[in-house]
Length: 206
Image 1 (cartoon, rainbow, N blue to C red):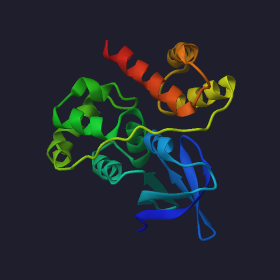
Image 2 (spheres, rainbow, N blue to C red; image 1 turned 60 degrees about the vertical axis):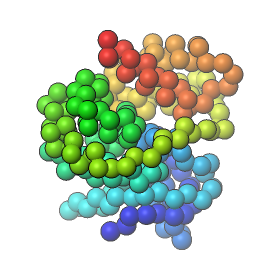
Image 3 (cartoon, rainbow, N blue to C red; image 1 turned 45 degrees about the vertical axis):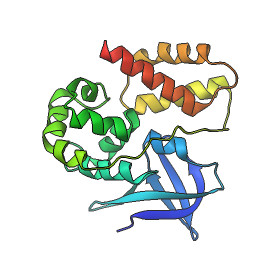
C-alpha cells in the first residue's frame, strides 16, 4: 500500500493532482485544503496518501497533512461514507474544525457540510467522537498563492468546484458575484473559494 508520494507536480485542479514519480504519473484525489497548499506545476511535492483498492481499480487520495489523512481514514469507517465523500467533507470543513465539531457533538455544523445529512452527522458523532479526540491536530496554515487568472476564469473555476462539492448553482452564483465584487486587487482562486465557503456556511447556519 502506498502511503506517501514524492515527485514533481505536473497537473493540479480542485479535484485531483497528478504527480510524476520517477516517470510514473499518479492521479491523486485531494480535498480543497490540500489543493490550497500545492506548489506551482513543475515543482517538487510530497503528499500523504491513502490507497483505496476496488475490484476494477486502484484510487489514491492525497493529503497535505497527516492529520487530514488520519481523519479521512476514520471517516471512511463510518457506514455511508466512502472515500470520495470523505474527501468532499474535508473540502467543506478543515480537519481541525471537523475534529472540534465531532468531539463537541456540534450536529448543526456537521449538517451544514454538503453531502452530510442529519443521520450521517449523528453516526459520525457516535462512531468517531472518542477516536477523533485522540488525534493531536496541528495548526492549520493559511496558504498563499501567486497564481492569478482572469475574473471570468476564476468565477467559472470556483463555480465548478462548489457544484462538485454538492452546492446548487442557484445558491452559489450570487455569493460568488458578491465575493468577487468585494475583492480588491487581482483575484486568486483559493481566496475566492475560501470566502465563498465561509459565506455559504454562515448562510446555512442562520
